[in-house]
Image (cartoon, rainbow, N blue to C red; front, side, top):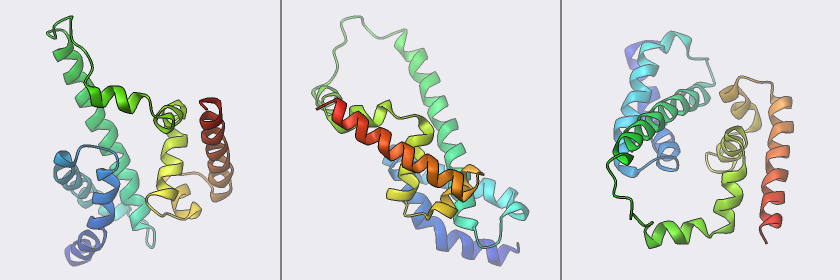
Length: 159
């Protein structure tokens, strides 16, 4: 991939990658994480599958988000040691914890959450989402159906 082709890739897919990141992390982190995604994509540009560049970028973004969350958890774990013991959750945390959808969503596996997110929020086809997970489209379709059924079951059990 030439520098011009990569520039076109960047300009064409930055809005989708940014939207993907916004739904998975703090808005204040999106710009930095998007730059990491495209930095990795630049280094690995020879591995980009023709015609499936967006799915490839989503896969990279998934790894970047995982690493980012691990770093945050590590930092929070460190800071947790210095937090006073009489700390109470904020009213916002309490309200979110009571939402049935939030509870049902949290019960899903990471694969189930990501499969539903890629198709429902990112608008990927099952074929493109399967490429993100590096599985066959048929296997993805079956797993997505199970994930949706699990979410429905989680919602009805919380009613």
